Image 1 (cartoon, protein in one colour):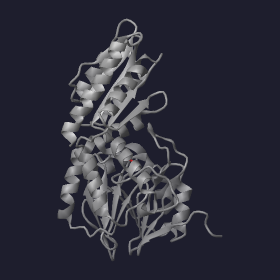
Image 2 (tube, helix red, strand yellow):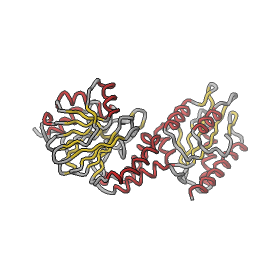
Image 3 (cartoon, protein in one colour):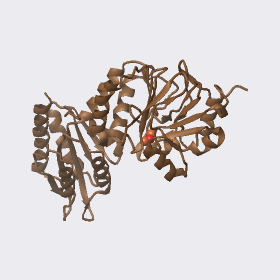
Image 4 (spheres, protein in one colour):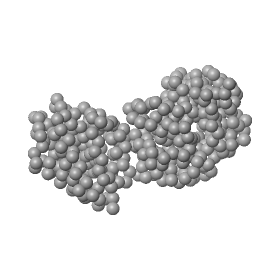
Length: 397
Ligand code: FEO
């Protein structure tokens, strides 16, 4: 019987045998509005090799795809480029079913797989001959975990880049050039902002080191989303742009509100930015979530954060977002804090402290209204938006 799940050939000797997760919407706190894929790859060489596996729950899909090409028990090696469970969740089951001669991971990967699953695997410390072709490995620590590595199959010029260059984007097409490019670009920057941004210096180092590796790349195959078969310079340039985090002439206003007081200040600030001729996006945390905020932060040179005070603390939705954004280490940002309170007024002060800790440039002190903003306070918020947008223009033009 023909398998429901089929492998798809991506080069002369390599097949995609991964899984498409159309339904996932929360990927450890990241809103995956278009689902994702867990890509795995089967190399048919003298040593048949499986590069990466898939998340728990997708074992049968991966195995069925493999079975359309070869009996899975003929697989000699499994490579684990990254031990996070979205790529290793079925590794134990795969080893039991396939009985490979060896499983390889980076030195940290071997420790991580031991800690997660009690597995003993070999360390990919040198290029691995598969017969006609060779797999070489480059450790990419912290991209996205300490165990991460990328691997390159020279026979077909395939760079298995693991999390790097990925997108959370489910689809029935395999190649990036088959997708709506505006969607692809949005999902690429969203993925970078939420998964990779904290390690931007390591991305720059990786991009700088690539030419010296002399890889004749024919395709870039990340572990999530579509693969790239052309325009590699464009892909690398996009990652360099994201990693450099140069200020962008665009603003975002992130706010939460209880009785619309903070919202009024948010709208006044945004209108000031707009009046200065800078594009601005409003994000109401009642209708959005942290990964959308981080995407907007990555795309914007100016970000205002506003929240009420509740029980002597900044409103919890804003605390969540600030904690999240701080961990992803954005740089080169102009910021502004604002809020409203009834009596104690810790909210805008706590936002300011967090933005200072993130080294945001805060040229204007926070504005905080008591109960409802007065016309004077709204005018001040408008003026703050206008002034900071003008300042943004001086660093982006
Ligand atoms: Fe796709 Fe860091 O795992």
